[in-house]
Amino acid sequence: MDHLTFGRRSGLRVSAYALGTANFGTAWGGGADAAGARALLDRFADAGGTLVDTADSYQDGQAETLLGEILAGRRDDFTLATKSGYGLASAHRSVLNTGNSRSAMIRSLEGSLRRLRTDHVDLYWAHFPDDLTPVDEIVATLDDLVRAGKVRYAGLSNFPAWRTARAVTLGEAAGRVPVVGIQTEYSLIERTADRELLPMAEALGLGAVLWGPLGGGLLTGKYRHGTEGRLTDWQGRVIRTESDRHRTAVLDEVLSVAREVGAPPGRVAVAWLDDRARRAAATRVTVIGPRSTAQLDDYLAARELRLDDTHLRRLDAVSATALGSPHEIARGARDALRGGDAARIRTPEPSVP
Image 1 (cartoon, rainbow, N blue to C red):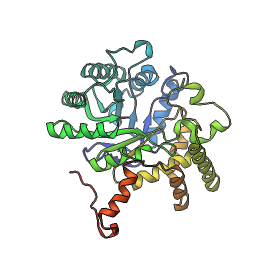
Image 2 (tube, rainbow, N blue to C red):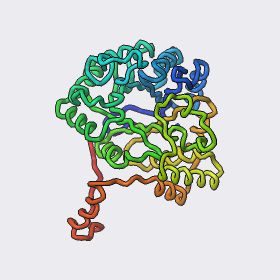
Image 3 (cartoon, rainbow, N blue to C red):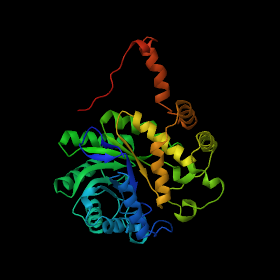
Image 4 (cartoon, one colour):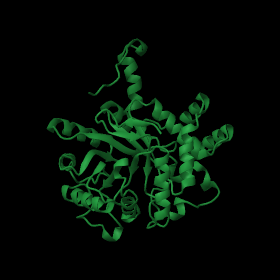
């Protein structure tokens, strides 16, 4: 598996796929038991994967606990990422142990380190914005955790672009440890990150970790024939359904391309993401979240599938998200401001040292 430098703000090396561990454990009703989780990580490592992504909330803490057991004796062979902010099971959540305050983040990290049986994590994410904690407090706390040696690199997960850009700017102005990456949902049925998040990441030199490549299983086509999977097992967590005509059109096209290339539709969806990652101006890593080695093998097989230009254009077109205002109105204005001949004016690509 290819390895990449995670953006232009760090020397952190990551594998092109991250093994997501939301299926490590069974507390949510579906997932892999201890033996199954170990088999998944072993198979991922055999394929050259090194980036493992978890969170304090996954399977109400079971995912981190299982990872701690599995990684014993080989912790340094992996880049380990976890998240804070969402907390454990709902019965244990409170205003004191959730969110992004300094107190909650430190408490969350200490719990994660105990479950993971390690003295540090390589990449630490603030999982979600809480709309209460000032961005400068988040940046300062991440800086403190890095300087304390408990975290190596820091990023923001599921944050809007304006909050992330502000965090980057505040960190630069105060000489803090930089925010090096973002994590966001991205797939053929969810491309709204094309509006702001991914252009921002490329402009600021941030690495991008993209979760949900199969749209919660929707892009496999299996929910057209049944409900087995997250629809029944995950108790409503991150469920995507064929809820509108746009998603129906996307899935129809994925199934059509899959028939033409002789590959499973889920593999086609991931191969499309791989192609976009190869062509992107900044690092993009895809989080895969299998709960069996068979599913993992299907993800890995997507690395070998090369869609031709015709298939890629069809998938690009059917899945495109309207950029909306101000992007669309600005496009026309740019032409007018350039005297109606934009082709003669070359704009340099953004460059961040």
